[in-house]
Amino acid sequence: MQDNSRKAILTDDADWQRIIGVLSGQVPELAENFLSRILVDPAYSESGLTMEDLRSSSEDSFRAMLKGLARDGTDLKALESLAAELGARRARQRVPLESLVRAIRTDFSLLWEALSAPSLGASPGLLVHRTELVWQVVDIFATRVRESYLVEYEDLERADADLQHQYLTRLFAAAEPSPPDMARIVGALRINADAEFLVAAVSRDDSLTVQRRLNLHAKWDERAFAFDQGHHTLIILQRRTSSRTDLSFEERSVFDGIAAAVAPPVYGFAGVRMAVIAAREIMTDLPMGGTGIFRLQDRWESVTHHRLAQVGCDPAHLVYPYLRRCSEGERERLLETVSAFLDSGSLVETSALLGCHRNTIVNRLSTFEKYTGLNLQKPRDAAAVLLALYPLTTLSRRKAPSISGYPKA
Image (cartoon, rainbow, N blue to C red):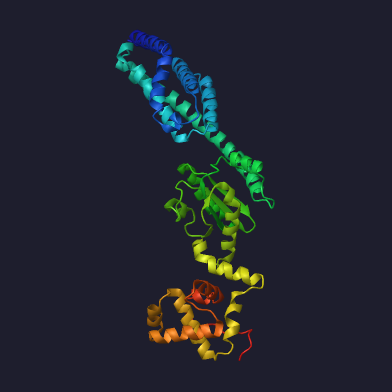
């Protein structure tokens, strides 16, 4: 019995070596079958990988795996070395990890199909006995490829982050980059200079949250950058959908639950510098503790009012000094009426809101014009009054403030 068992084992071993020897001569065919299957994946077919690279790496992989199978998995140093080199190379070539893993699964499928091909005459018992060995060899290969890929990818990400920071620092320096410098920045950041960009500013306190979310943007094939500047973190996204005035669901998800100041859309990378200034201006203007996405159309009144006031041109001077001849009661009624009218633009809605006759509203607006010289039916005058009364016009018709600081009649 023992002699028969020993003979059976020797026969299986000899048959196994015969099969591996035959397949070793079919490596080019295995590689071609591999290419025909993986090239349906755009990560390979539309990448910069050459057919020569794909073919040679496939042939090398099959040879190394067959060599490991011939030695019953006892000597896999060459296989592991090849796997480490392949994983690092594919990381440098920016092949997505999931595509690489699918390709390795294809290796296993092809290898098993070849081993079980009727033309080789492998007995079912032999294949069952060697199944675990085949899986072990391919699994070791896959694990080593993945480990090497991740190590190299992390190194590349760190290097990219350092490089991006250097070039973003140049972009946002006090001196505007020259056209050649801008071209180098565009090349280093690997962006489309003619694309549309979304520029936003968030608090440094929210920086880590946003950067974690930005990591997901890599899956959308969008370029996304975060750059700390002062108390703010600047966010730059190369947009996937151009000429869109609102934010997409994915873009909104980046800023969910925090305060984000979003500049007007930028058409072309050359406009990013000015968009950053706009985003920071809007961010600086936001009230403490607020959350949400704030755009220029949300904050232009406040930004303009405060900026003019900072240079001694407070728009309030266009209105309040001229109301000093009013009694306090009349002044309050006029400001309340003007604010309500500016908010709605409708005499009917204003009269309904304040519970007054339409003629009463008309008379109050006429009185306001008599005092200030500003006719709210004229867009230019209405814009001036809107800024002058800020923030009264944004407080949903609260009681008008006093005009302390101005002499009373």
